[in-house]
Image 1 (spheres, rainbow, N blue to C red):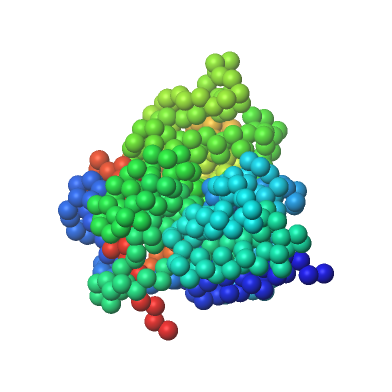
Image 2 (image 1 turned 45 degrees about the horizontal axis):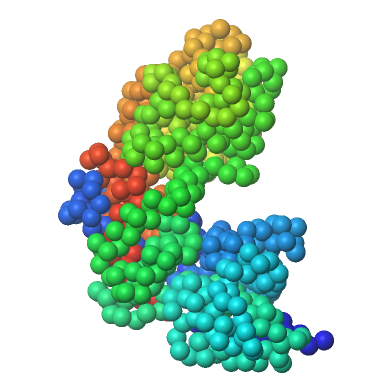
Length: 573
C-alpha cells in the first residue's frame, strides 16, 4: 500500500539539505564530543598572549577533519531532546532513540545503518505529532486552510535549528514542494499529516544527521576558514554535545564568530550552562575509563575477608568520584593539581565506614566532607578508584600501578608477554605481604623490566589502602607492616616516594601527568586521538597547567582558541 512514508522516502532523496550522501564520513572514529597552539600563553589566562613552551616538539598546522562527520549516538539523543523534547521512543519500549541506531563508527553508512535512521525518524515524527506538548516544539503555528503558510514558516524556523544554519532558498523550495504534495503522499492530506511527513524528512536529511563543514572561504596555509554557523556548531557540540542555543545562533547569523575573542566570549558564556557540566563530566569519565562494562562497575569481593563490601556500593562510589571532579572543576573552580591534592569527598552512611567515619553522622545522600589530607588527597585515594582497581581477595598493585603509569603519567607499558597473566602468585613464609608476593611474581626476565621499573612502584605506594579502599598499616592476614616506600618513575627519572600523599603531590607537579591530562582533553574535544598536528596545542595547554593558576574551565575555553578550531584543513585524496 502506498503511504506518505514511502512517498517521502522517495522524495527525500532530493530533499533540502542534501550534501553528498549520508555516510561520507572519512574521519576517525569519535573519541568524545587541531593544529597550532591556542591563542594564549603560560600565564594561565584564556586568550592571553604567549607561545608553546616545552613538551614534545611540535609542527604547527591544521589536522585534517571530516567535512561531514555524523552525529555520534550521544549527540543524536541530545539533539533530538533539545529540538523536540523527545528523550525516549514510546513506540519501542521507551528506549533512547540512539539505542536503535548502529554503534558509532567512522566510514560510509551501511544500508542497515541508514534503515535504522529512517525507522527512528518515523517513530520520532509520529510521537511528536501525537503529543500536543511535543508538537509545539516543531509547529510554532496553528495550520489553517490548507496549512501552506504555517508549514512554510515551520520549514524555515525548524530547519534553521535542525540544520544548525539557515536553509538556502533552494532548500526551502524543495521542502515547500514536498508540503504541496501532501494530498499525494499522505493518507488524508491534512496539515498535521503533512507536518509529520516534513518532520520525518528533516530527521533523515544528511544536513541533520551530519555536521557538515563545506564552506570554502580561503584560510591560512591552504586551509578553509569555517563560517560562523560552522563555528557555532563546533562550539555547541564540543561544549554541550548538542545544537546551538538562540544566543549562539544569533551570533552566527550576525557573523560574530569569526575572531578568537568572539569565540572565547561565547565559550565562557556556554560553560555557565548545566549542559557544560555534563560534557566535563563525560570527559572525566573518559579520563578515568569509568562507565558501563569497565572495572568501575564490575568489582567483586570476598565478603568473608571484606564484610564492608556490598555491590550496592558500586554506583555510589562511582557517583562520589564524579561529584569530586565536578566539585574541583565547577564548585571550586580549580585546576588539574587539585584533582590529586583536594581532601574533599562525598560520603553517605554506607561508605562512611570505608573512610573511618561514623555512619551515624550521615544519611543516604552523599554529603561533602573534608578528609585527612595526609591519608586522602585526590581522586586516587577515594574508595571508587581503590575498589575498581583491586582483586577479589586482595589489593592489586599491578592494576593500580598500570592505571597510574599509563592513564595518569602517559607511559604505555605495552602488552604483557604471552602467559604473563597466568603467572601464579607465589607463596612462602618470607612472603608475608602482598607487595613481596607481587614483587616475586613479576621478577621473571620477561616481566621485570616493565613491572619493577614502571608498574609496580606506584602500585606499591597505594598498598596503604586495602581492597575496599580502607586505610591499612598492616597486612590483615599476617600482621606484617605495609611498606609504601618506592622509587616511582616520574618525568623520566626514578623518584623516591614515601607515601600516597607524597605520590599525589608528585603527580600533581609532574609535567608528564599534566601533559597526559591536556592530551586527553585535546583528543576528546577535537574528536581525534593523538594527531601529530595537535602537539602544539597540547604543549601550550601543558605549559599553562604547569605555571599554575589555570583552571580546568580555562583549559576548556582555550580549546576553542586554536586556529584548528575555526579552520578546516583541505583533505587530500
